[in-house]
Length: 207
Image (tube, rainbow, N blue to C red; front, side, top):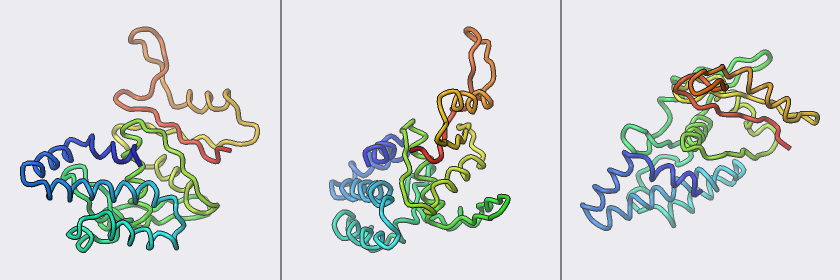
């Protein structure tokens, strides 16, 4: 929760919105902060719930956390993401429409609103270098989400997917990383990701 909430507060656009709300009125500032707390709750505690439990949790957030204006006007909270340009929460419908399916040898994964919204929240955490652990039952989409991040193009991240196993150890992880790094001569020879990018290690089935 704190990582997600902090990532929103650190967003320059959100900071400007909060400053404007402070000038406007105390009630407006409280409304904006309540929205950030509510959406952080959905993205953290709410993401750990089973699908059949989420509607009840969303009702709780709307009734006890959000300002009545937002509680009545916002679409389903699980389908929202924070738009980086406007600093507002918007539905992912248009992004879902433009998202290409993940095509693999034996299956095709078509992104849903909830899936896209979740991976956008995950990207926000990665952007502030917050470590993330995905937990869930078999078939809940953890591995699919990692493969989606691996296959999507990012101007700031270079992702490496490491599939852990019973015999996996440090040499195996090192080998997976080295294959995605290149030698840099500046300041002495060392390995680094492509210029301008951060290396993100995705570990599947960590036990």
